Image (cartoon, rainbow, N blue to C red; front, top):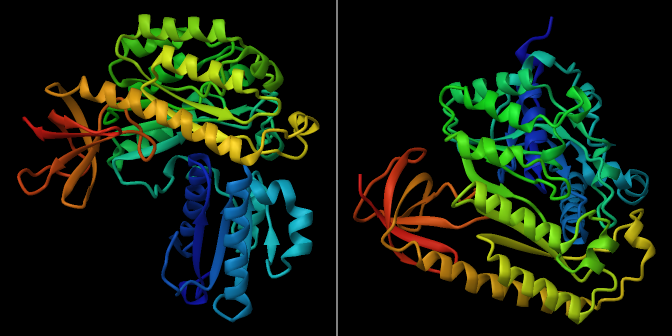
Length: 437
């Protein structure tokens, strides 16, 4: 019989990378805590004797952060500060053999789909009954809901399929069960995440079933906002717009990485879409869902990208006036088809183009924010920081989008609650306002 007196270990799970990694860490922590382990997440305290690093391997910057973190804890272990060091996640999945040779201080390496193997190191069996009881490490009023794993797309620059495997959808019933569990614990906002949202259901139901999933999640009592992240533009199922317009719980918000607008670049990227088709899709979105906030990301410096192609991208951004936009610089990734192309855009040119594109988006964002002055919006408040209560409108996702600031000296709001806020002034990426009810 296992007793608590045998459990002397304290485990620190360190998460790097995207929200999908965060959900993986939350599931890991849930499994360990259910077996009476003392587990903390991203703790700065030095009283944990076991560290598990959940790595990212997406682009060079993320890979370097993961390697630096592993080396940092390797040094701590060498100096006697911790007893065991385990590494999991995308970087471990992709480069395990090389890393094992280079960093022998790590006790074991695990890939993205090897949670049972990692748990076995702690004499813990993976429990299916815990799937709907996931602990969350975000503020308690919002959570990420991962609806599928992996990706079947063949974008030439992307190594995600190498690290996450083929697309695998989770059943609607399982996702609804998890959503109900989250709602019982106070979650009001669900952010649906996947490598490719629009592919959801094809493997299980032989049809794209994201609309059916959204309808089912809207029935969950307590959930007030449902937000869509990471859709693929090619052959986009426009029925999603119908659900978005019909269901008040589904935010008028879509995160749809477009990556580029010049047809030559799109073809080399293997994006299976043209600028003209993308423009038509954006027009459909705005016609069917008035007021929709479209968030996208662009990739600059792809092999062969000319100044003319970059200017075409800038022209497209001016034309589209996206509500939210982020920029990545191309990273030359091994074992992708783009790796066979010469990485011929100099690093300084990539950085310059990224800065120019963000400067353009800053102007667009500022102009759009000024239009919101004297308008009133429903705002969900996330935290108090620097003398302000900080929240978000329906048009904004945590950490990556605009925020609404209310002066805490003059007004009070409860964190995790909604309030009506009248916008009184605007900056490039922030709104300032006052609670009106």
